Length: 333
Figure 1 (tube, rainbow, N blue to C red):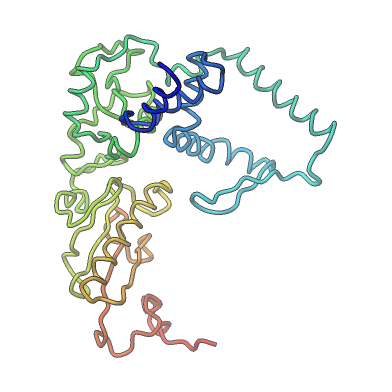
Figure 2: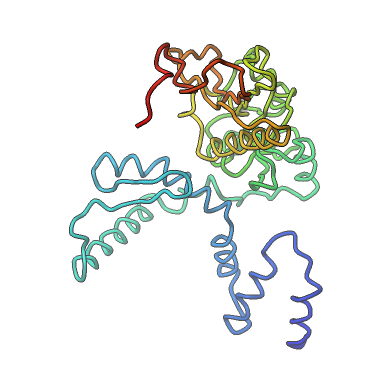
């Protein structure tokens, strides 16, 4: 192949289902036409948002609280704007900075000397690989979604999980496989033998063993949905078009949802509002009864999207402040 052939392949012939082809060619071009498989894999990891999301979740969920309690770090911002701050003043410079970085490197090496590479075994696929045919059957059976959290494979990579882990004697057999996204699979690890197959179809979601939950049972009534939530009509509407946005995960409060799940719920809220505005609705109340003292009666968190129309109440000022009698009317200075 000549340079012009490669140019033509890149410009007109390449058909991509992922970013891997141009990443590999780019690496080879930059490194003089030769690269190790490890270098190619590193490029893929760096450019894979799902891997970055996984480690964002790991960093925020485990080392952050420990370092915060010890006063080493603090954080600010929300969602994708989260930032980490080192609580050291003044910030180390020069030789002091080099010494502290060296101590970090030594602690990393000490960890590997004590624990070895076995610490990563839960993420490795060193066992007999699952064949493409079996993987296809597992993902087809799961309808292309994680059988624990429900996320679609287009949004997060799916893996074939041993229901009964290999470490516990589980077999390499289709009946022992289920489809889990990489986050759920990494969380499950080899700790239990829970079979999540079929739970999504019964309206049961991660964190739930209560099949009688009223809202879990309404998942199939969705008027709109995404990978994280469904929207259903309120059975006791405050106004016509009153909608409930229900996370697919069965948890009692907003604080129990991950940032990704919250964002998914809010995306559906915005979709409902956009659809309502296309029908002439210009105002909404959006709110959550989070906790029994706040009026929550069903302990599966849900968001109310209530269309408002001119004249539906004599004086709408204050909106949701009206949940406390006498607090809605106030003067704006």
